[in-house]
Length: 386
Image (cartoon, rainbow, N blue to C red; front, top):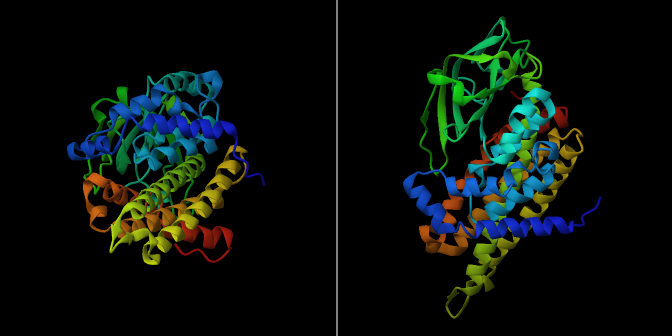
């Protein structure tokens, strides 16, 4: 096991830090007040090639791995920004690169790498299925060279900001409880040509996340929109889920480091009763404890990313990375808010905004309770709990 950090990683981190310095806390606060999408930030990330890192060189990307992609997202969050505005264009590559047809890759990847197209929407969750993906009811019915898709999805992020969408739908006709994840197929839907059959409404939530409920009403798509084989979509989605968990784990690491660095600096400078408050163990120890947790969780994230990049099984590691980093970042958030007292609640310090944002990572893209159920059943071989 080699813990040596390649020199290129340091240069990459610094380049992202330099980019993010152009988008300080005031930028993100203004967007939240306006409930606006960070268009300028995302366009800059695309223009500098950060969102096409995973796309192979032959299609115009950098041809790098999930490890490097995670470093970029980590530094965005560590800078005080919010990488969730654009991260899907990375983790969707976990599906397209491994299971998309050659024609599909040749058609879309160069445009995605050049920033001419955006793939930010991954439509899986449904109102009546929740976390039980095997129970989705959105249906795609094949007719010759076409499919007709009808159904409803919820909590689908960045639909308005996407040209393309990955969509999971049921293609079997006689679904029963025994089949569970069989009969689900994955489609790459071009929203630009979907017409009025696709409609959406935004769901207001506790921070500035562009999340939607989406309705599909007899949407006709060509058969070549199918990713891989019909009925095998759930297996393909798992690759996307593993990539998503690992990349969001990197964002959680970035959040954790942001909280600790901001709070440690504040506690060192802030004097009360004639001494820096950071000299008090009640302030210092929670931050130190959170720092240790973030560092340890980060190693699990690196382990999971390394396995993914080697195309080795990484389901347990990806899930544990998401679990540990989300818990560590939330621990750091609470330690920071406590250390900063009233100023932690003041919007101008940005800690309260990041506090709200990082809470999501305990619930999305998968609840930590489901992660524990996965570990208990799939890793520890205990009876299924759901």
